[in-house]
Length: 301
Image (cartoon, rainbow, N blue to C red):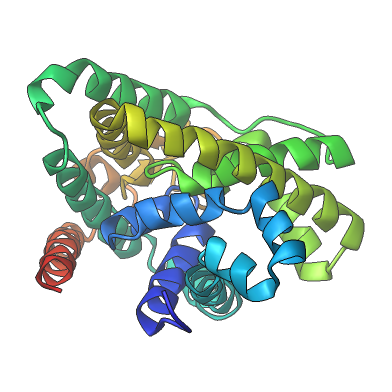
């Protein structure tokens, strides 16, 4: 890839916006938009060979080796999104949580269909698909823990969260929420607390460099099984992003994915507030159509 890519930049914006929402993965957006394989391979190339090339052959050779233009375009999009669109997403979560959740529900459902269609001999991989579903549902049933924010816990939380962010179907923000580290990390970002941010960033970098190598190996040697598992994770994660949720005592949630939440049917939710069923259904269907439309455009190019 030569130079800045507006298309990759836009994909980065979408990934950044998704990663802000507990329940939606930036990796899902990468898969939907057709850059997942290139992302994994580009991140994998950030290795000792890249450092050797930097000193032996110069910055240009190193930049080419790591597919730097692609990574830069993507990272810039993610950063712009987190800085700007994150506020819009947060507003949507606060003011219009049901329609926003419905949109992501449709996006994830359609992306699961796209991933499933890429599986060769799909009938042989049903067991892996079911494993993915059970895994994602089990993650969704976990409830936030109480962990003290220390340099070590921030490091480990960053390593886990970044793995989830790059894996389609599981949200890194949701993992932080489960670990009880979402608020400490957000607070550190807002107040620019250098020490906590460095610990968290170090964990993210370490986890990312290790995990992309595992993913790359799986992509090359066990692609059908991996895609089946990812399809299952996407389907299972729909239980996390399901729009209609109530607290443990059957009341409206005080915040998104607050402790004790559980999914209910729209008519049960209607006993507490307007379920917006028609609007949510329309938006979810629009999300499905949008993803299939994007896939069709990508194939035609």
